[in-house]
Structures are given as C-alpha cells and as structure tokens.
Image (cartoon, rainbow, N blue to C red; front, side, top):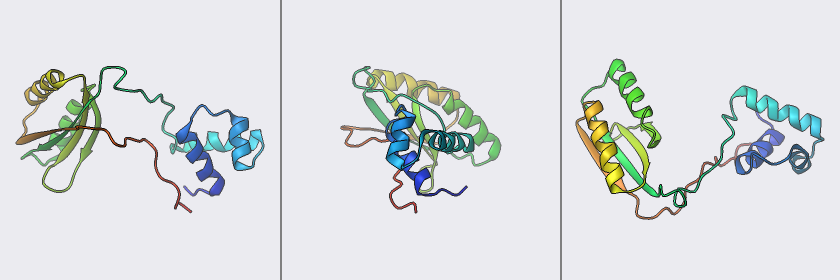
Length: 155
C-alpha cells in the first residue's frame, strides 16, 4: 500500500489522539470533512490502523512493575513455537512478546503489581512449557514508553 503526505499526516495525528473529531483532522491536513473521513476509513480497512484503544496509566492502577523476560529454549520447530506462542499469549500480564535474534530466543514484557505477582506469573510460565533459561530484568524507572511510530521521514 502506498501513502501520500495527507495519509501520513492523518496517521500521525490519529496515533496521538484517535478521538480527534473528523472536522479537526480535516482542517489539520487541508481537506474537507467527507474526503478526510473517506481516507480514515480507507486506512482502517487496509489494516494500517489496527484498532482504537485507551492508554492506561499503570501507576494509577497499581500495575507499575515492568519486567523484561528473556527466554531460551532448546526447541526450534514450528509445533513448539505455535504451542509456546499460544501459551504466552494467554497470559494477561504479557504486554509484549517477541521472537528475537541473538543470545535469547524470545523477549516478553510483563506488567504486574509487584514482585510477588511476577513470581506467580513466572511459576505459571515454567509449569506451562519447557524452557532452557529464563532471565528476568526489572525496570527501575520508565523513561519513555510510547505506542507511536515515527513517521517523520516516511516520504
């Protein structure tokens, strides 16, 4: 799919504030309401806009411990990967899950209330599947955490 400057501007605005009214979006990108609305609909149908979400403040919800979990396995086949992906994806504490290159095979970002809650997660994880090594790194301070994708040099 190709994008022009107006598409990129719309995406940039929407990822900062999905609830921005269509007339305000249109004004920012130099369109009238109807063509702007059509472009937004096209971007949604194409899948480039994956959803409409609310970003929550974990500290205010007592979910302010981020743990980066590095996982090694001796299993490197599709069946094991499919099973492991299902298991990990079913854990509600897992906010991010990546297959990696390098020393570790997978990286998980786990968000929990406290160390006890992480220990509970860890025990359920190792009971659910066989792993060679699990290393947990606790974030001491969140300096930047964004869902935005930088689009400045797209065109």
